[in-house]
Length: 366
Image (tube, rainbow, N blue to C red; front, side, top):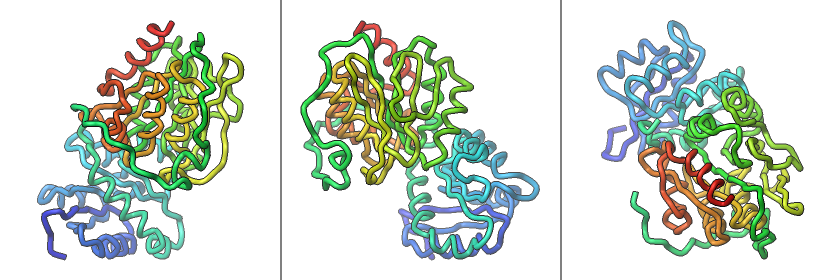
């Protein structure tokens, strides 16, 4: 196809000729995409990139001469570029997948070890979506608030109403326990690590929704736990929200905050996708608004789409301290931008300022 002004220029790096051929055919069916090259390994890819740099790289992991992870780290160190990993080695929860995310991959697609052609054809929409989303990522980051606007109407089946219908607050006016709720998506694995590593052991209880597929979150939590002074783990039903502990919603299930007396715990529940996600940030934030109210801090971080924007506004209306990550430090400014547009954030702050905001909020409330 002939390139246009809005064309996303893609480089495919995979040692399988079949995969390269099928991916190129899929992507070039899209009017806004052009495959500018295909390489069987990273060294050939670097030759092509020296002549023409792509907007997005679709990258395999297991290849001759240089593996994909090494190439990913090299690209991100020298000239950060959105990379979509597509590999048989990145099944949900694997160490390779976590390493790729930590190295800066914009998205990960896991492909099977057999039947690759059929799989790629069946997953064409997922590949196209991932490339499009990656092209909009602010990878170099690894403003002023807009005028509040009325939230758009969202069908009940797609909103937090499907999981937790609106209702009166059940929050106490004041408790000694404080809850910090964090919601994030694209770019959030690295951003969360930066925030949580900076927190001391004595920190308010934290509940997190990071958009991740099922089976990823347990390994992700274990990795963070090994790096942080706070305890980090995948949440289980009825877990208490305790100081010094971070609970991450399990992939594939929603997490809501509940209150029993003056204490908080979480419930892990099934249900439909909300804003195309399960777990959903909106679901968590709405429950925090209802059961913690002004005893909470809400933080919306890097991510695509608008999940969490309405929930953060509910937290704001309930008296919580609310923050949105600024555009300059976001990988993707979608979720914070939508929250800011709704007037949901009391402050817009950089990623580096988030740990201080968490700790200062706890001291002020105390």
